[in-house]
Image (cartoon, rainbow, N blue to C red):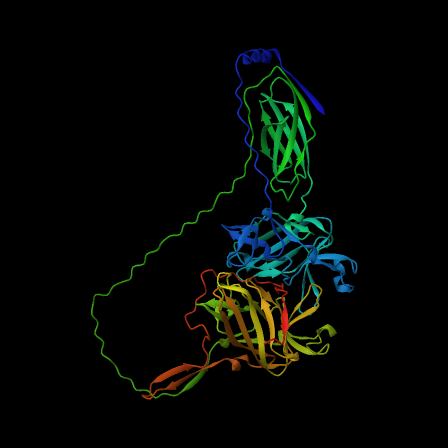
Length: 624
């Protein structure tokens, strides 16, 4: 025990004699805030690093779920990678960057497994037109933890694409486009169980050249365990020193690690003297509450988050006051308050002009000859992000194409009004025997990869528009028929590039796949020959009323060197009995009508610029 003696001078002693003739008034110390727990995320979809832009500033947060999203400060969450994510590094040179062959590695996968965390990053909240090039740079500034960290993607032929690394300086920065639809998922690999802290920063320049930065933001991961209670807080240490002050005594505490957030409460025996918030690893309190005599002083660190850092108590310090007592307690407290954001929406009143006059028009009769004509309607999509989406509209299930290829607000299209074109940029070859369901190795195929590729349409599937208030269970997605010159398959890739087939027309149909609500996924769509394909999809789900609703649509693909416009539906303008023109569209918005509008809570598309978003769900083969 450290002993400190404080001797008062004659003037102070005289003051004490006066003070002892009345009862000292003591102001009770304020109660220290209680510790709470960070929110632990371990089996949800999250954009762990969510880039925000507002009022000319960049910021980093965390976004969870699908629209309407939940947003968190990075300091308020812990990303838990459960034990189920443990794998063995494959014995192939392409994955040697993860560690020796067969050594353990824990991976939060690029393709969603409902039992594991599905983590990515996004720039969807950043508007276009304000940053130079409509891009930001995302940097991994530092990593602390018991093992190495690697963030990588698996491309369409099963090869790893490295993005961030804690050990290789070549992989610490990535440029991302901004705006709706720009969203990435990847494999997050950790070399050992335990707690990791990953520090990210986002930088950019405005269109006027001003430099912007979020500053470094720390994200905490915990590898291991099966539930939030398994997250072990880091240990701390606390020390205390006491020194005379005028008046009173100043108590100073040091806490390690220095970045542990929380408060230090100071005690005289069992009596609290007050508390102070830790800043830079220290906290201090000046008090006049120590009476004449010897005092045993301690300092207790109270963490802001109990599942982040552990509490600790300093060794006791003996402090002797000669000539007391004092009469007041002064508590120095630093508090951090987050002010709520208030949003005020204005009301605009528009007055319509009135016309009080009278206009007389003399009719004119024009006689023309009618010649029937035929034109094509709809769009060809050959690049950019698109989803085949399921929605509930007026109690009906509607399958539509969510077209995000033009930027801004996505357009909802009837499948019959869209042709997907896979040209030369989509041509590739079957990589190995592991992909024999597509054909022999080196045989030619055309493919939409699960990671976005320039000049190739990036087609995924989406159930984000359906809420739990509308329906229960999964969307049952079936491929019932394929017409075309070859076979087609949709498949995903596991973290090490092994294909997992979802649909395959080569071995018989129908094939069925279950999609959970709130899903936005991407996979590989492969076609084995050039030409026109028509895929018949059926989707069904059970409403909360108990009724089952179903929608059947045909999706058209133009593969290879052909004119995709020839597959668009036609509209013929004909002649009526009176010689005037009329028109009839050959294709319309099936099952929806022409007046369908998106629901009020339309979710932003979770785009993976290079990341696949597949739910690893059951595949029921040949099920009707």
